[in-house]
Amino acid sequence: MCEEIGRLKTGKGISSSYFMTGMLSLMDSLLNIPMSQILDELPLQDDICEALRGENNKLKEILDLAFAIEKAQWSRVSEMYGKLNVDEKTIFKIYSESLAWSSQLMNPEKYTSKQPR
Image (cartoon, rainbow, N blue to C red; front, side, top):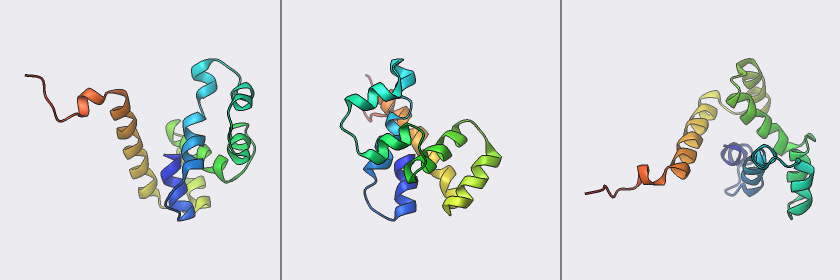
């Protein structure tokens, strides 16, 4: 989700920094390791590390929007997409596509064209 919103916001074709920020954002909870320790071990760009440490930057803004949507904080979502100058319908389309993408990653057999005989 962060990657697609980043692409919209920046107008660039590749938004790998946004993707990495989103992918790593919950790694501390998944691994039960402090985020600072995880970031010390990974060779990441400074802006990604700053966002994951909670410092305000362009990556953190989009990460905050993704978290607000996941937590159904609708007034905050409205405020944020307005601030980012991104269309509400587009944001929710991206969210829906992101859910489908993650479901496909978690259940690849459900999305393959081959059916058991």
